[in-house]
Image 1 (tube, rainbow, N blue to C red):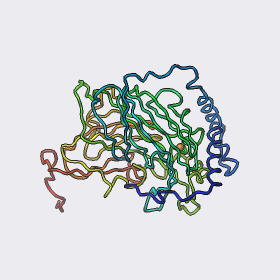
Image 2 (image 1 turned 135 degrees about the vertical axis):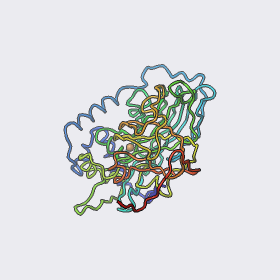
Image 3 (image 1 turned 135 degrees about the horizontal axis):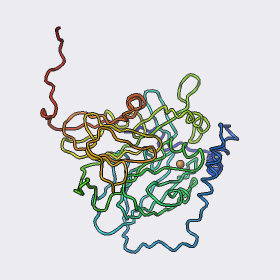
Image 4 (image 1 turned 30 degrees about the vertical axis):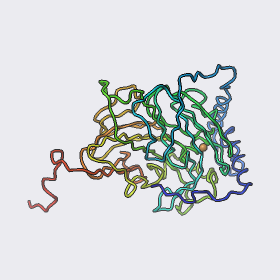
Length: 405
Ligand SMILES: [Cu+2]
């Protein structure tokens, strides 16, 4: 699906590593100030203020004299994360008591093609190498225990803020890892629903990392599974995990996309491009065409698909052309789902779920129904559905033909 260039990352000189990590680390404390000296991006006071506030919040002690967590009654399980658009193996209805779900994510920096037609590429900042980062699935009451590792050949500092968690900036304050470091964070999933997670190193580095791909989703299911408004169980056959990603790729004077030697080298140019708030690309799963054509999602007539849509930075309005959202959870899974939706809403900084049972075969386009984004910036995925056509639902009574007046 998504095509990567140089997936193993070329060897990086020690000088570059030091330059990248030192600057990234300093920037985490001072916003982009540390990089300003080298590349002179335009900074404003608001950014410096936000960086100071972030640093102050991050300095709150999280472990001082608090009593240890009560882990009695929990059993430990490992969840093997998989690349989007797939979902990890999971139960829809939890069996047994609450679990400590162990996961591992690596903060991988890699050069990624965004649009093969134009050659646009980005030094993507990722969790486990994919945009979006992998989907995590747990049940309400479970603990998530994440080992976050920053590879030795990384250029930058990373961390993670789980919107589903409570305290310490969503865990962001407790997970800053420099190249070659790892941290372990455990938090209790008390809120059922779909939630975004993202990197948040501080100041302007936060949107920089997020708009370079460093975000994903976690789904916290009710222990007894999804339900309709009357409390009847709702079950799905498969999950399609879609991450909407806005990129602001710098261009040169001739309108060609710039290329860079290493992650972080585009920092100054990117900040300039981001200021306009006009993305050059707004794609599903990392790249134009990542979920269309031969990469299309597959389903069968009668199959119920749960579409989990993550949008960390921008508002989105998903619409399934030729289908519907039978049940849509824009908010908590504790709330009754919306039903029969034509278009639903994913607030920037959140994830949402929509359930649909396919009734006709053919190609369905799943788009951001800001159609400029859907058709011109890359915000389109395809479902190819196999099965038998139902003329009761639709029939071409007369094929296009000339008519006379
Ligand atoms: Cu990061």
